[in-house]
Amino acid sequence: MTTLSGIGVGRGLAVGPVLRMPDPLPEPPTTQSTLGPDAEKERVMHALAATADDIRARAAKAGGMAGEVLEAQALMMDDPMLKTDVDARIDTGATAERAVHEAFGVFRDMLAGIGGYLGERAADLDDVSRRAIARIAGVPAPGVPESDVPFVLVARDLAPADTALLDPELVLAIVTSEGGKTSHTAILAGEKGLPAIVGVAGALDLAEGTTVIVDAGAGTVEADPSAEALATAEQKIADRAARVHTTGPGALADGTAIPLLANLGSAEGVDSAVAAGAEGVGLFRTEFLFLDSSSAPSVETQKSAYSAVLAGFPGKKVVVRALDAGADKPLAFLNDAEEENPALGLRGIRSLRASEQILRDQLTALAQAEAENEAEVWVMAPMVATVDETRYFTGLARELGLTTAGVMVEVPAAALLADRILAVADFASIGTNDLTQYTMAADRMLGSVASFQDPWHPAVLKLVGEIGSAGTTSDKPVGVCGEAAADPKLAVVLVGLGVTTLSMSAPAIADVRDELARWTLAGARDAAQAALAAEDAAGARAAVEGLTPA
Ligand code: PEP
Ligand code: MG
View (cartoon, helix red, strand yellow):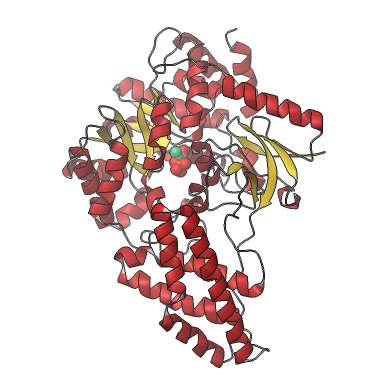
């Protein structure tokens, strides 16, 4: 039995066989073919036919919309123009791999240039091209592996687009060697209720098919466990499933209401959020809807995507974040510049301001969606650093018909000037993931500095306290929608610092609701003071643990 450690996301447990996600394929080199054109053309022909068969088989299995998209991908492989282009490149000496890479690239750019529905399909073409090249080279297809039986997915890292498509029926848990607790892989895994452990050194050495116990609460992966360890894990899984939770709206023991809201990336999560008792949505990450889009979505497309979420929460608050593009969530139509440090670059409100028409379209679509639904829309800007940006965003939102406009506080500068920000904005929502990243100067994507990415750090809590106090003084709502809100004990501390609502992935709501019900507001304030007085994150945790009511 070998035990590996990493950073656990959520508290779930899972047992299953390992399936490895192949690393992305490198770009095929431009070296000349040594096989000659006939042999290279033969290789391409077989690979394209086999890839198209594969995709059709997947289409038949998927059915519905997904099936139609896959069928369209298979059809692309038969395009005669594409084949002619591949052959022409081989005739000039290219290898089969290189010719497919280049010809599909030209086709992809052409589709992207057309825009609209065809433009949206450009990313599919990249996927098909990589699958065909893997087939020619005789290596496993890139992307999430396919399986008929449930498995534990082991990968270096997962793109948000891959994570969003994971089927929770098949993927039992995720283990990655890269990434921190607040990488978007981890966040999306949490949203799907999948136990995940990120930043696990040695994860890539786990052999395919090895049985592992993934314990997110403990942050461990046990390979080849003993029969006894397996039995204990199965029992814990059963106990967790059978646990009885408190119900109803979020509240402290003294009756102070702390509304518990859900974080969503699309309408797909609406049902489970409602089932978990979410009292609305505290963060709708709209950029997750358009990760694959090569051109800006139309007002009409956006309106229906937003309506699909709003429809699930009649009479409730839905806080929608304007597109937060950049860093690990680049959007092709908003971030075109290559940046050395994208987390410090033109992301969030900065990139929206640089492409104002895209922001105007989004706010217009949102106002139209609100008019057609009964949910109460609040809109907020990501990555705000200054009062000027706050004024710009809230002014534009109101001009375009949205009545409640606020900002996310994720940058220390905004936290330090929270009183002036809240003099302009209707509310603030604290993004503790980025606030921690920027306070601790530690990239949230990087496994090697994941230990710095800890929102329990008193420096981070001090900034949260600044915003909480500004909210209390100005009588404006201050929520938390970063992962910190999903940590039950930390949620208590946040409330003690003046936070009035908490938003998290739906599977975390029950545990947070249970914990809040144990504390009074005075107790939460004491916990907050104790955490602030600590010298590091571990000290803050220990101090709060010591104050926990019996
Ligand atoms: C955050 O930074 O805490 C946040 C909620 O936004 P995201 O995780 O999407 O960057
Ligand atoms: Mg953020």
